[in-house]
Length: 172
Image 1: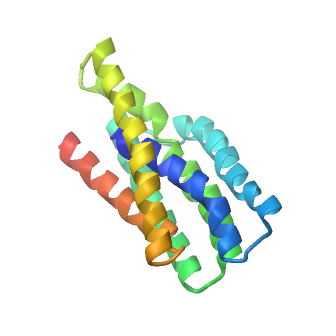
Image 2 (image 1 turned 45 degrees about the horizontal axis):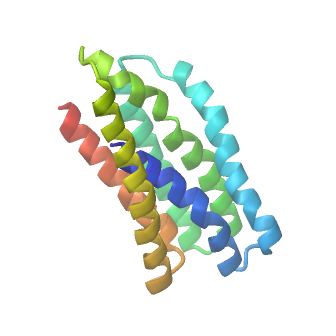
Image 3 (image 1 turned 60 degrees about the vertical axis):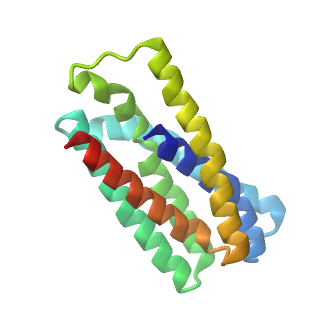
């Protein structure tokens, strides 16, 4: 699951500036501010979400992923109707804030199931995250080049949906 989590964060924050320039939303000097919106929102929401939802860790995580899918779908719609700057800002604030807020729950989920993670297992988790960072960024980048720059949003929507399905299969 770390594969998807780290991959989503680095793919969006890494490609959003390029997207803004290619789609002529902004000059390259201003385009970096869109990644800043994403990371600022991420920081704020990580603190907020710890207290926002009640219930078990898996319930909180499930809710966060469901909300992420909704916000990404809204972002895709905004991009599809070609209101690019609003789509970028909306996605950076809400999708960025919610999807990156999964991390506090990700670290505490094993304790909910009375599991202990050993050091060699945690190393494997971080390797999976690094692979997701490289692989998803590369695949989305190629899709942006081959099909459309809008694949940044539509591709991440599909990845987020896959992340949710894998979470459901793992937990249930």
